Image (cartoon, rainbow, N blue to C red; front, side):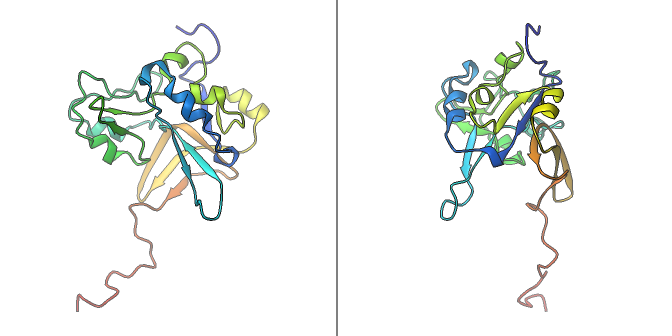
Length: 205
C-alpha cells in the first residue's frame, strides 16, 4: 500500500550520466538498503581514466521482458506487478550465473559469500512505500533521479529513452536514460559492423 510519495508502477527512474560527478554517494547508500545485506548493487564506471574524469552510474534497467528471469533454471528471479525485476530469491537461487551472462546490460553479479546472484531491485522495500530508491535519494547532482512524469517535465531537460537496440534485438526498460535526442539507443554489441570483411585474410579461398 502506498502511504506517501510515488507509485512504483508509474514513477520515473532516470539516469542522466552527464550529471554524474563520481562522488560515490550512490554506491555507499545502495549498500545501506535493508534488502542488500551490506552489498552495493550499483555500478559506477569510469569512461576513460586516461583522458577524462567522467563517471557513469548504472543500476538494473528493469527490462519489460527480463532475460535474466527467462534463463533462470530455478525460477528464482521474479518481476512484480509494478514492473520491478527483483533480485533472486535465496531459497531458489542455485548460483549458476546464467543471469549474469544473459543480461544485456551486465548488471547481475554473483556474490560468493552468499552463494547467490544479486542485483538492484530498485529498493523495493522503499519504493513500495512511496519513497525514493537509496541511490536517487542521496545523489547531489541528480544524475540518478526518481519522481513523477510531471516533475520530470517541469524540472528536467532531455528526453527519456527506454528503448535499446542490441543488434537486431530491441529491449525496452522501466528505467530510462536521459539523452539530448530521442532514442532508441543503439548498442553495437552482438552485431558485426558492415565495414568488417567476412574473410579479411582470404583464408576461405
